Structure formats: C-alpha cells, structure tokens
Image (cartoon, rainbow over all chains, first blue to last red; front, side):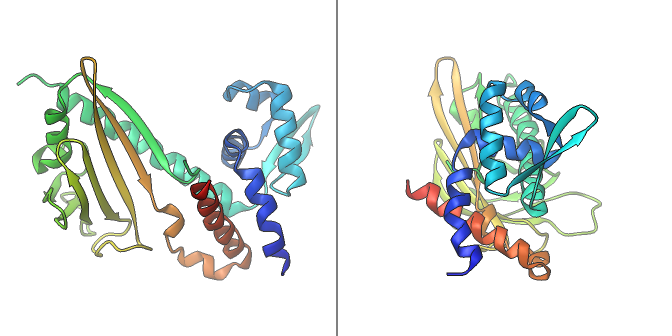
Length: 108
Length: 143
C-alpha cells in the first residue's frame, strides 16, 4: 500500500462530515479565521475550532498568523478550486431556478 | 448526498404542468438558459443549448429519463459541440412534487467526480485528490 492509498480512508472520514466539508469549501475560497467561519456557518465557534483541528491533523488545512489573528487556509489547491467551481455552478442554478419560477408563475 | 452533488430546491406557485413546460419547451428554456434551444423531452431525445453570437457551438444534451410531469433527467456536455458521455458531462435531474399552492422543484446535478480534467495529468498531487474525491463519492453513496 502506498502513502496515498493509506491516506485515503482518513481523508474520507474527515470529509464525510458535512460541516467539515462546508468549512473546507469556505476556506478553499478564501483564508478565514475561526471567528469568520463561525459567522458564516450555522455552527458555534467552539465546534468550528474542533473541526479545524481535525482538518489540520488530516493535512487538509493549515493555520498561519496575521497580526493577532490566526487564519486557516486549505491545502490542496485543486480541492479548493473544485469547491469554488461547485459553489459557482450552484449559484448559476440559483439564478436559473429563480427564472424558471418567474416563467411558471406568469399568468396565462 | 455526496458533497460533490449540487442540490437546490425552490417552491413555485404554479401547477406542475407549467413548471414542466418551463423545463421542456425550447422557447421557455431559452428564457432561463442560453437563447438558442433545441430540446426533445422524450427518452433518448437530443437537445442543444446555445447562445446567438457565440463563436463556440451549443452544449449538447441527451435525455435519459422522462416521467411527465414529475421527473426529467438529462446529461449535458461541459464542452461545446461534443456528444455528452460520462467523463465530459454531468447529469441534471429535476423532480417536481405537488405542495400546497404549487410545486416544489428540486434540482440535482451529479457526475462532477467523473469529469476528466486535462490539467490533472500534469500534476501527481492533483491525481491524488481526484482519486480521493472519487473514492469519497463512492463511500458516501454506499452508506
């Protein structure tokens, strides 16, 4: 078993949690502090901190200091890009579905 | 639900037949996607979604499942001018359900993990991620 194969189950377990996936998606789009993540996601700052530790242990995110703030960034550029791409496709669908709604609700 | 799937739901104050028309009639599709639309809403039916004045051709569509006015599934190519097959396309599924005062429309787009990324070949790391994400999707779907 090579290193990548060994790493797969661990990464799967880490990413199978929806909150962690959402955290990773957010960090993939931009570097954020735990407080900034807590503002964006419906999860407490304490829970965010725990998830960030798990993600960091799995090698998916790393922390760095800017002034007095600790921020997190995603490791694995492609994963971040992919998350960003999916997010953008989702937003396109939001617009399309709004248009479909307007079309269907038109009288006549 | 796999993280790589896109899922959206919207409640529409109109009967399912009107929502169905917006999803299947070319002149109505043209009001929410592109502006030059061909679409045949029957199993195996082909379609093409494109824009006037764009150099590249339209995005081709292949209908996989039709249950009027409840479910519509088609595969659409991510690149212009190619027939959609696994690896170059994703699958779009619309489900329509009757609710109080109208229709709940659910959209699910899947198959992103199947997409072949030409850039991936240049970066071993990227191959690793792609393999892991593919495994991830299988793992989540098998739960």
